[in-house]
Length: 206
Image 1 (cartoon, helix red, strand yellow):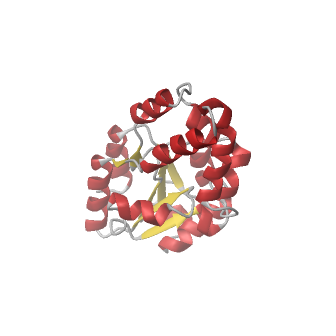
Image 2 (cartoon, one colour):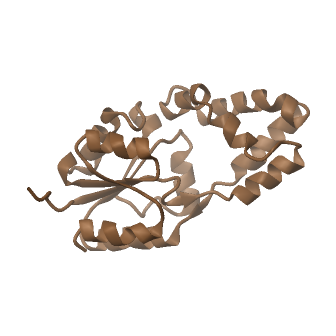
């Protein structure tokens, strides 16, 4: 049986709507004597990052642990602190193609939400990026208390956007999140870039 047309769109933030410059990060790492990728590698250790995504610790507390882990690599606590501060000062850039598409979806009368694994700085980031008024709802894992790919996250997201899971389309660049959304009853697409917008447009029948 043909699946009903999606009546709402949920999009991931990082990797879909927002992107970070690896060049900028690598330049910071070079200046502080760290190998490329060290900052994100240190921050993204699951046991270090997960509490921030679940709202159990603040973003600042998470970054404090990252500083502590980088003291040796950066050549001292002050240098590690400065490197992390410079890295965190970059809040990314908005993908213009995705934002334009979101606007067209909303113009067509369909609600759009950001559904992301985020920390307590997410609202400030959205303000900085000019995204605060560009979507109908923001579902932040640290506010919900559970993160993707858990079913409970997607249940909360559908409740926030007020559309049942079978009528919601979710896009994310993380395969685990996509599989989690599908397990929760949503339609989901693994995002690979703006070329995927053709599929999303067709799925929404726009």
